[in-house]
Image (cartoon, rainbow, N blue to C red; front, side, top):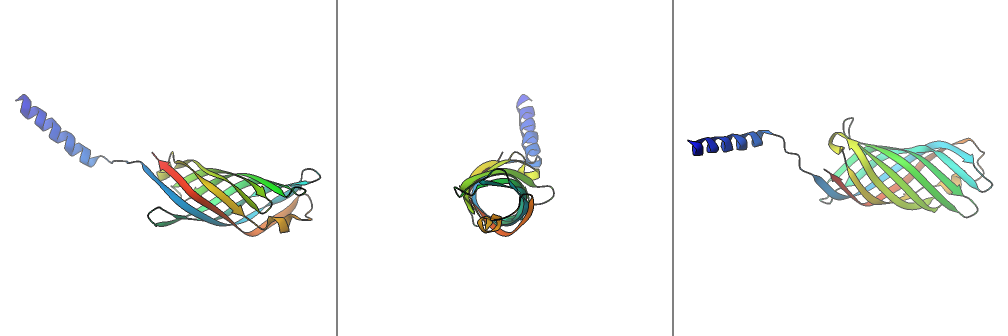
Length: 176
């Protein structure tokens, strides 16, 4: 009778496991590109430094390692400084990446370089829905026509950048 009871409990456990959702970890290395537009204000913060406070928005196009294409809406508030004497720039931003209203990932970005082109890091820091606890990092390169646009702008002037490009290479992500 003990053997029959053990077999019955094992069969019940196996049956129950078939009905419970199984959540497997997901990970991949993807490539992403974001054609973007930006709006914000420009401020003179010293004799040779200008600061841009604003946000860029666009659509992130993502290609998985299997060649699958996905897209998401992106909005990134950003602070960028430009040293006009040295020709350097530095930016820090935070991004909301929305695949749908329920599935949102968050990321931080940093980059340094020359005015109009900077390189840095894009780091996934969490999310909601299917992106809950997402993490990962990739290499970021941002291009913009900022050099031409900020020259001669008055402090506090509104700035609208009609186009720019952010490329994220080898973004390794993991969703536990």
